[in-house]
Image (cartoon, rainbow, N blue to C red; front, side):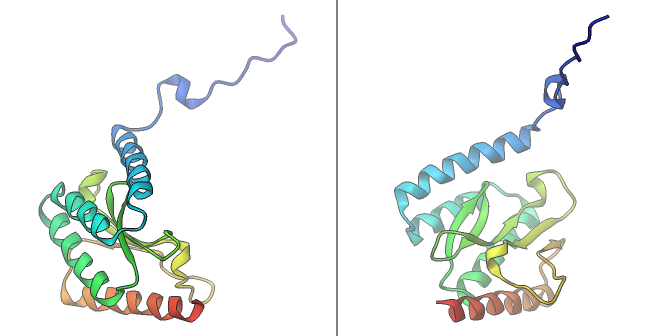
Length: 160
């Protein structure tokens, strides 16, 4: 009997690891970082990347992403369009993602997600929503998103 303990095996060595979707998202993010370095905060390049990402989406995901792009660029013109893990996103002047859209089909889930990163500073007391599930984007949801986007823009202008 040996006094040495056996080394612990990681879950990855037992065959578990990243899914194909997760690997694709990481690969997309690597390509995005390279493109960002070349584009150097170029709005036109960001728009091209977003429209290319939307073109890869199907059905309702594509419709919602297109409408969200219109809402965000109209109500938050200071945010820079870009992609983030292959999905439409919008960044502040420092290049930090403020809000993003994740298609339901990206990971085979039943709803899309519209979310905010911590730099959005949408803090409201001790608890607030940082992302929202989207099945449909009706005028009611659009109004809520517009209010949130305007709120983050107002706060962003206060810091500048």
